[in-house]
Image (tube, rainbow, N blue to C red; front, side):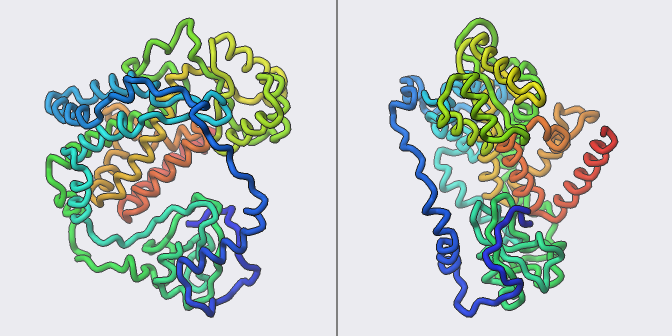
Length: 452
């Protein structure tokens, strides 16, 4: 599925290359086509240690292996989630800090060792996670769907003879291994956000699979067989971990009021008189760069160049912190911004910095989950089941996926993109779960339409 902002590489509607088509030759062609644009781009400024707060001894001395082994013990005592929340409450605000120059955004300190490594050890049940991953990969069936997510400026291929509609595209690897290379096709450059449709029978009239993803396994094999390849204890740990991480991330991201955060995650700098509040500026798709720059130069007394950096961050991520300090100090910036945009006020919110850190970690968890479910067919199926769990274990509540779809207006660009990619990497990689998601999506769409 291609994104609508892709850039065509050629003006010819139909063509066939008369040279050997390889990934290297395609990349060479793209580099030549983009040479002018790249020559005008500027390199980002080099970040020095002076821009980053020093790492505390507490973070440097933390033993992720030991805590990961402790989590396995807590799991047996049914205190796993409580221990995780206490750990995140203490360490997430320390691991996610802001550069001294706020225009550079958030910096991750020791995140892998303190926050991610223990989760890996718990999931795989051993410190030797690399060997465990190799073993788990050996249980996988050969994939019959690609689902590769396109990065910006990555080539995509559209077959005029076989596609159902122009949004059905292939990545380079699948295209060069398919019959479509001998048909009438177009090569475009993706703006990012789409995915490869190889293996999707709804996207192609014929030649659904490339040679890489051609079905070779027993078509009569039950879907439960995918799960049964994994050891029972691994399945149990995976389901528990996925449920906790998914609920945590969705609850922190799809939230209307930061006070709705679970009390177990609130540290001493959540409320009260302290200097750890942040003024968050959101993208509204209404104001221009120049308008935002002019408003910020007055609200936080920044230079034009700094204002441009803030505007770029907001445009790219969907939001950014523009001031850190006391609640009164942050409120002053918010009031100035809104006073200068009376007709259509720029959205600004004041959050505790620890809440912002938790949200950053929640986005990190979404990317972590994408990496995990890509390791195993069984992991992906377990995760799809977790996505259809109710939000609070109540049969009357909506599912976690419904909560995301209904609460997209609360999400900013980067968070929305991360959740969408997670749906693609889970639901869209299995025909059965893709159908389940499609039904749920239509249900939510009807609900939103009726609310208009």
